[in-house]
Image (cartoon, rainbow, N blue to C red; front, side, top):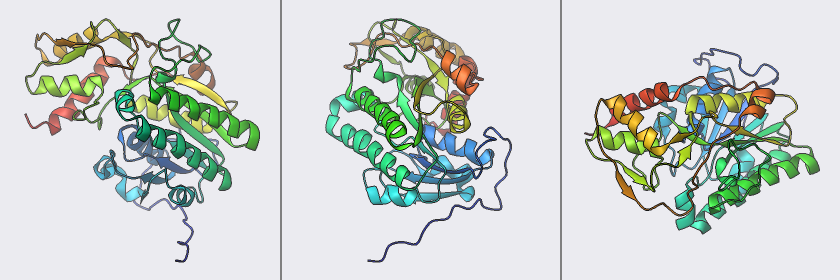
Length: 339
């Protein structure tokens, strides 16, 4: 069977650009793996608005084409799997920057299905780095996670804190960070890893068995049901709205002096799960009492980031407050609720 023809990224004529977040990347041709997913689709949208030529690689196992509906005319969508090196090799053609977001993303899911999580997060990431190097990609922006820390010894947790993952997912993301660093040191491929804390916002699926806490709470309250808190609710998390995460990705693509580095991407503010529940019920003007269940395996007690490095190296500062982000998320979920 003959090889498929080379791919050439072109910005389609009906695409409008709004800004110039990344000014020092000459051609601005991007590949977004997992670009049809929750965070990935927001990265794609920000790239299009910033004038990038964008290709998406996604197997649509959890992502959806509807997540890309607002920019569908402006991008190239390749249906493929990061575990297939041929798919990744083809996707990396003619690309300057790879934003690697494709992953098996659930902490409790990785505990339940460690083999699947390992296959996607380890083999898939290595495939991406190998093909990016082969294609002479300039930079890879790798999506990592606060799960690499496990239970932190100090708060807020800085990037040089000890890493002791409490789940297969956290361990796999830590592997990805180290592989990125090694590809920078050994092969000259520029990489930067972004450790996301608790990301939330529109397009986040509330229906999955392993759904994140914010869409889960909002969707239950929209339907007049009580939310479930795992543990006593005093555990803390650092929540960041998804558009701020997307902006951090673009800043990382063009920043100087970040090659081989790992940066926290978060709000820097800790919120307990009880406080979160109260804020969401206040948003709906209701008073409800949550159910309580035992803590889930792999969940840490506290997770709050120091974001000084991202502020200094990327110029990153969160723009969306928690209440504003919750309101936007609730509006999006309400428009799609069957209740």
